[in-house]
Structures are given as structure tokens and as C-alpha cells.
Length: 421
Picture (tube, rainbow, N blue to C red):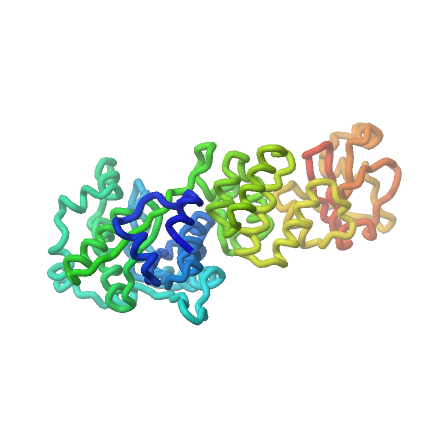
């Protein structure tokens, strides 16, 4: 595979150093991307560099995932307008464990010819001594060179400036590249476009210290057509860890992608070939209401991150929002789907309750007479089935898992009722 041509078609090539295409063609070469453990999980914004590393491996090259056990203690100023909160050694170590597990879903560490590696830069950064580091590395960087980098320049223009701690981040990243060059003959670093200054700093240091040739490739930073930051939902960051963002919520994030973004995201976040993406692009243009491209995107990315079983559950759960009878649904799935809906505990007497009782108890109707009117008007649903008899009694046998009813008034007004005895 011509990796550069692949990245160009997928709109993933923002910038590259001179000669990198020739180096890749003459390969295989070893390349890396760094992941700083600023949280216990990576988020969907991290998927682009993860998949960039996976594309490198699929093209026959050797990928290294560098986890920043050392640099994570310092903090990357790139793309930040304020100083990061410093993490403790214990926090970084805990975050690293979660990130390693997530990276292993995308990279093949047992490939016979080009196995992936995970390395931790704490192995060489934490033992560093200040004076030797300043003599051997710091002397090769002028302050003028460092403040000209975009990540530093932007911070200097702000009111708070930049601390010496974060100012030194560029030197540490450059030193990472030298160490990987020495240990693994690594000659390619990749990342987002905001990392270009750090990458070229490492390339320059390899040239100065080792008289070696190294390369860099950067991808664009992902944005939405609406101008909002990619990777955010109403609930905040969309995480890869299922304990932080459920597979259903993860699936829904991709299913709700704007029509203007979906084809681009299919290129960015899947391995689907050109003909399949072109077909989905045509389907999106001709019948946007069917959301075929969004469903393909949600299915594919959720399967990569959480597995096929969770995709099946997420798709089944999504169907609940569009009229499926909930009587036979799994209680756990229902509670996940309607987790953001208002809820109430309602006592159920031995002979059951009427839908009118539930409507007034949950305040979906202000009075019994209004509840009766709503039922007779066909505007009330119990477990996604229209209620037709205001006098019919509901018992535990009618409840989902014997415990829950989902009431709906009109199209969108949902309420979860947990029955008690």
C-alpha cells in the first residue's frame, strides 16, 4: 500500500517532511505516535492518531505507541491556552494501564513481520539528570527557535504566558525521538498538526546528534462543520472506556453525526475502502433521511472499540427509541437507553395500577381528568405501545423485567417508572 496516497485520499495528510514518501516506499520503516496519559481513558479525538498508527502497520511498517509516563508529568502546551494541572506519579501510572488496554484493540503485537510495540518514555526521562540533559540536548535549541513554534507563540500571546515546565516539553519530545531512533531505528514520527513543531524539533536533534535523517507526518485536527469541538457530546467527552461512556452512548454519538461530516468521518475513522465509502456518500446525498452513512459509521467504529456484541446491543437499544415494543427488552438495555429520562418510584398495589394512576403519579398529567383525556386522544404510550383503555390495570407482569415501565407522552416526553411494593 502507498501510505501517502492512502492518507491523501482520506484527507488525512496535513503536512509531511521532504522525502518521507520515498522513505516509506523503500521501507519498511519504524514510526511512532505519542499518547500522553492525561486521563484514565483515551477519547474519540484520540482515534485519529490511533488509526494513523494502525494504517502504518497495515501498510507493512513497524508501529510504536509511545505512552508518555514521563512527559505526562510535565504537560503538553500544544493547543492549550492555559497551564495544565500537573498529575501525580500515581495518577499517571493508573492512566497508563487503561490506555495500554485500549491501544491493544487496534495494533497487532504478534504480527510475524512487523509487530507493534508499546514503550513508555518514563523509562528514559525519569532517570535523566538536569545538567547532562542541558549540556547534551538543551544547547542545540535556541530560545528564538523555541518561541517561534506555534504552540509556544500562542501561549506567549496570552495573559498567563507559559511556565518553564511546559516550555521544556519540546526538548523532552525531541529527546524521545532520539532515544527511539537509537533503540529501534525509528525514523518517522506522526501526530496531529498541532504537533508539527515538536516533531521537527526531534528531527533537528537527530540530525545534530546522530547525523541521521528522520521524518514527520501530521494529520489535520478534527473539527465539525458546525464549528464545535469534535469529541464532545451533551454529557461531555466521549471516552473509549465503556465505564465512562457506555457503548450505547458511544454508538449514538456516531449515529448523530451531521450529514456534512459523515463522509469525511468515514474516511478518517474507518478502514472502509474507497468504493464502499463512495457508495455511502451517494446514499447520503440521495436519501439523507435514511442515515445509511451514519449507521455504517456508528456500527464500524463501535465494533472496533467495543466489539461486535456491544454493537448488536447498541443497535437493538437504538431501535427502542423508534417504536419497538419494550415488553421483551432486557431491563439493563432499557435503563441504558432511557438513562437521561426523568424517573419516579411508584408503589404498585397487589391488583396493579392504571395508566391514569401512573400519569398523575409522575406528573405527566396534572390531573386524572387530563390523564383520561390524553389516553383517549391516543397520545400516551406504555413501553412504546399506545395505551387505549384508561381503566385497564397494569401489573408487574406487564413491566419490563418485572420492575420498570416506560411512559411516553406524545413524541418525546419520556418518563421511567420504577415500581415498588
